[in-house]
Length: 125
Image (cartoon, rainbow, N blue to C red):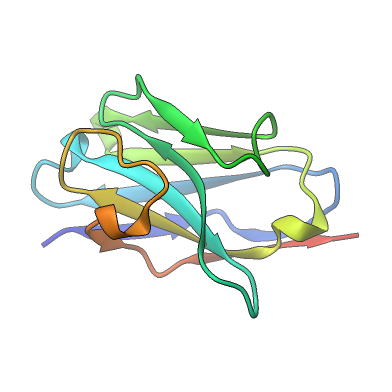
């Protein structure tokens, strides 16, 4: 069984930064492609960023491009989401997802197999 656990959420003022972490435990998790999604109150879950198992391929939603950076540390089976220049519209619950294949998962949530419980990010104006 694979477990995905997010951490690092919190309250920050607009223009500030946060770094989210996602630890995946279980068999062969260092070969999993990973992604970050978010869901704001009253809205659908949306794609934020994704990374291939090697870290060689990354992708971002247009709304976060240039402000957020996804990276991974395979020896620790950990994926990070560095969020800079945060805006109030970034407020949401952020979810980490793992895909039990090495290929880049992209923005389609149905291609991911395991999900974390989410971590709240609140950006005040």
